[in-house]
Image (cartoon, rainbow, N blue to C red; front, side, top):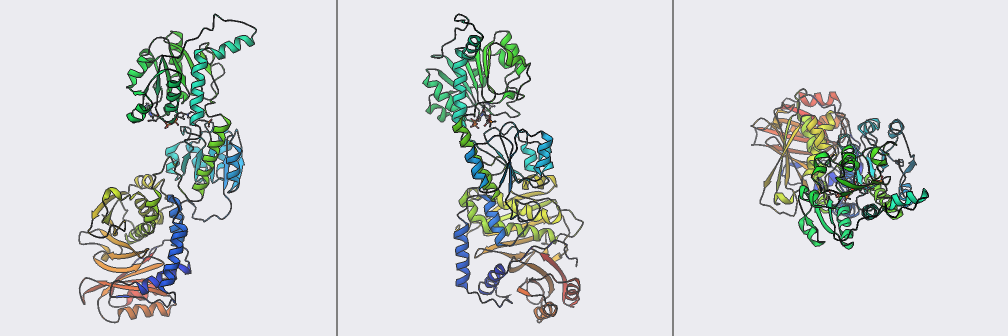
Length: 632
Ligand SMILES: NC(=O)C1=CN([C@@H]2O[C@H](COP(=O)(O)OP(=O)(O)OC[C@H]3O[C@@H](n4cnc5c(N)ncnc54)[C@H](O)[C@@H]3O)[C@@H](O)[C@H]2O)C=CC1
Ligand SMILES: O=C(O)C(=O)COP(=O)(O)O
C-alpha cells in the first residue's frame, strides 16, 4: 500500500486535452472508459498533432527530439539541464582561447560570450560553474577538476579544432557533458604546414635564415636534400595525412602510408600504398606524423622504433608531441639515425626554454601553428560555434565526440517511443518495493523490423533515465546513460522480438522487466516472478498496455492509480466516488482482467495527486486487494 515519494512534474492543460480526446475517441479495448468531457474533436487533435509534428520533427538531432518530446509530455526534467530547471535566460559561453570573429559573432547571437584568455587552471575552475558551454583550442586543459567545478551546469565543451586529447572525455561523459569538435576546417592548414616544414627542413630554410640574420653567409653549411623521388611515410592516413600525401605526390615523392583503420581503396585512389608500421618506418626517407594522441600512439616513436629507421631519416610532426618520446628523439638526432626533425607540436606546450630538442641545431620548430591560418581559424570558429549553439539548443551535433550518432530520420521516427521508454522506466522503478535495489532490467522490443534496422540506443538511454532519475540525484542523458547505469550496478539487457505486423512503425511494443525484486503491487509480477509492464505508442501517444499478466489501456500522462480488486459490478463507481468527493479529477479509467468475475486491475488516471486519506479510503473498499499510486 505504500505510495511513492517521487516528485511531481508540471502539467500542461493542452496535453491533457489531447490525452482525453485520445482516451475518449480512440479506445481500443472494450472496457476502457473515459471520464473526459473534452470538446476537442479528433479532427482538431490531428491538426494539433500535424502542426506539431511538421513544425518540430524536421529537427536532426537527438537532444532536440528529446527536448521536443519532453516539452510535449510536460516533463521539466529536461535531459540537458541537470538541475531540472528549464533555463530561459541566455546561456553563458566561455571562450578560453582566441577564436575567429565570425564564430564569436554567431555565439553572441545566441548567448553571453565571455572571452577570457590565459586563465590559470584555478581561474578556469572558479568561472566554470557560471558557464553553460566552454570553447577551447589546444591550450586549455579541460580536466576532471573542471567538470567537477562546473557543478552540473556545463553542458557542452567545444574544441575549436581536431585533437581532443586536452579534454578528459571520460570525465565529460561521467558528468553528462557533451564534447564536440571542429574536425574539418583546419585540415588543409595542417597539411600545408606539414608540407612547409618538410620543404623548409630539407633546405635548411630556418637555420639559414637565422644564420644570415646573425650576419653570416654560409652557403656550404646549408646544402639541403632533394624531395623528388624520395619515400615519404605518412603515419596516420586520415584527413590531414591524406592531404599531405596528395601534396607530396605533387612534389614527385613516393608516398606510402600506415594507418590500421584507413581503407585501402582511399589510399589507392591517390596512389598511396598502405603498409605495416615497421615497413613504413624502415623504408622511408621522410616520416610525417598524422595520427591522434591516444594511449596506443603515446610515444610510439621511441628508442626501439628509431633504431628500425633508415639512417638519415627526416621526421615531421604536425600531430601531437606525445606520439614521440622526445628524449629518444634527441638521442636519435645525436647518434645520426635521424638527420633532421621539424616539429610543430610538443609533449609540453610551450616546451621548457632549455629543451634540448628545441635547441638542437638539426631541429626546426614552430609553436603549434598547424591550424593557424586566417582561413582555418575563421572556419573552425564557425564550425565550433554552430556545433555549440546546436548543442545548447538541445541538438546533438554531428561532431559529438562522446555520444552516439543517431541519424535524423531515425530520431524523428523514434520520438514518441522516447517518451514511452522513459515513462515505462519511471513506472517500473515505482513498482519496486522500497529496499530492494534494481540490478537487472530487460527490455523487450517487439517489432516487425529487421533488428539491424532498429537503433534502440536512444530508447535504452531513456529507460535508464526513467529508472534512475526518480531514485537518485543523477541526471541522465544520452551521453552518460550507459556509464551511469554501469556505475550503479544496473544491467540493462535488450531483446528484439520479430513480430508479424506492419514494419511502418519502428516498434510494436516495449516491455520492461525488472527481475530479482519485490513489488509493492504484486499484480505487476508475472508468474516467473519479475515485474513486467508493456507499453505501445497509439496514434503518436504512449500507452501502458499491460501490467504483469493484466491487459490495460491507459495513455501515459499525469498520475496513475493501479488497483487490483475482485472483478464485480460497482467497483469503478465506488472508487470514482471516493476520488470525486475529494475533488480529484479522473481523466481516464481502464479495467483489465484475466478471466470473468475473478481478479481485475483498474488503471485510473488522475489529474491531481490524491492525499493520503483519499488513498487510504480506496484501500478500505472491501473488494480492493491492493493498490499503488504512481507518478508519471
Ligand atoms: N598541429 C596542428 O595545429 C594540428 C594538428 N592536428 C592533429 O593531427 C592529427 C590528425 O588530424 P586529422 O587528420 O584531422 O584526424 P583524422 O581523425 O582524420 O586522422 C587520424 C588518422 O589516424 C589514424 N590512426 C589512429 N591510430 C593510429 C595508429 N596507431 N597508427 C596510425 N594511424 C592511426 C586514424 O585511423 C585516422 O585515419 C590529430 O592528432 C590532430 O590533433 C590537426 C590539425 C591541426
Ligand atoms: O586541431 C588541432 O588538433 C590542433 O592541433 C590545432 O590546435 P589549435 O586549435 O591551433 O590550438
